[in-house]
Image 1 (cartoon, rainbow, N blue to C red):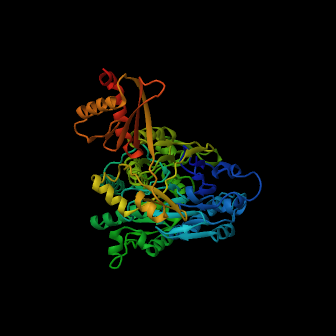
Image 2 (image 1 turned 45 degrees about the vertical axis):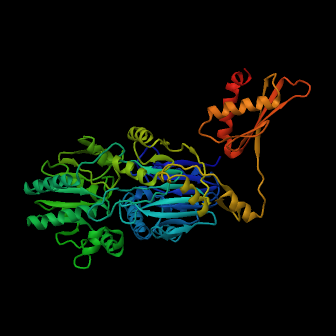
Image 3 (image 1 turned 180 degrees about the vertical axis):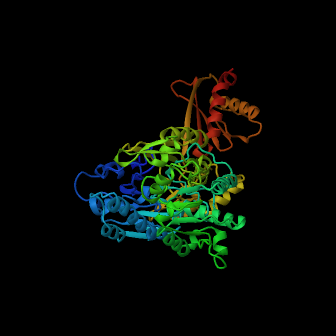
Length: 600
């Protein structure tokens, strides 16, 4: 039986370092190639030695697919292609291809230039890696080779994020990457057609969360920012350069405008200009409202939000700063946090998920003393708030996507084991499909039963319609016909049409059953008694006496004979066509029950 094998090298019962190997119909595909924010050693990248101990990875992989530009999905790409060695195609959408190298270079600068690490990819490696990228459009079917094809669907989440369908023959897998089922201020909701894949691989970051109303959250966020600024405090909002950053900037910009507030709002320099440039460039990926108003007013040109300079962090008085990266694990956001953490007037608002091991995760867990580099202890006195503006699907959203795609099996990645377990049970109960949640390095095998497409002739459909109304499209319908296989295509036609097309005469196949019994009467007398009995019992059927020893019930023929050497032993031969099998069985059981009456 055909099978699909899935092995997570990262994001198996964990968030971060997404990297999933899929083997489907003899093809090997790697889904995402991310790094882990919580580690600074070898564990930050997936263990590619799982694929092969020696030799280049190109010989073992048919293609690599990157779902979106977040570093936990693409951060290991230059290491994988240039340092480990891969020359095959890497597929991603156009916005991802444009933004990916900027974030990779920013990550390299923080790691190499600021932290001084040596065993790391270079700027040139990023450029060489991006030369291997093939950009794809949404809903475009891309032929990777003669048998393997891929197709991208809109995933919301961040600019350019896509879900991918991987198809070989009639077997298929859908990988969601990160997605959001609710539209926000700048992006639409994820969408996929009823593609019924053999396997849906879905993220499960918020597997047990059902989010409250977005409007309440936004009101709460603005209230907390406003209160802090009013009392002269500073607000730090750690974000990743693209995604939630634009969402919250639009929110604060409109609030500042409405309330006529004067406290300055800053954004980490460099990245924001580039980010906004790409939002303008890929305006078709944003939501309808932004596309409509784009000609009159570009939502990404902010009047109240200015570029941030490191020196501003020491300025007295209130301010709001958006700084990267989003989990406080490095970079400018961590530098500002260290400066501001000692003052209880200040506040840090974490707007999204924080991976274990990051400073963000520690302070959200209530840690008030942090050990920083060089064994230095940092006291956290500022207020810590968590408000999920995360663009991941919540439990309701994940269930909605499963309902939409109708997969035969589900596999959860990119989530915490306990939460996954809860969602797994929910999925299995509601959809009656198998749900898997492998750990890193664990292989799951999913057996597939391939569907074969058959064209049904119009004549046969009309005949079925005449017999009775067509059933509900979701329920299977049993059809009788003749299957013609020609030039790798299958057609179901009526037997008459098949005989005509193939130039054949019809042969009739009949089944015969023998019933032995004792009766001293002559054959014609026994025949008459059988006829009279059937006539009295089968009042709604046509029962004919054809000759002394032959009776016909509808198209079922019954013959009475006797053995020459033993005339008392009589034999009933009951014969029917395969179409009349049900009626034939009924008449046989009737005769067997009635033998005592017939012979009495």
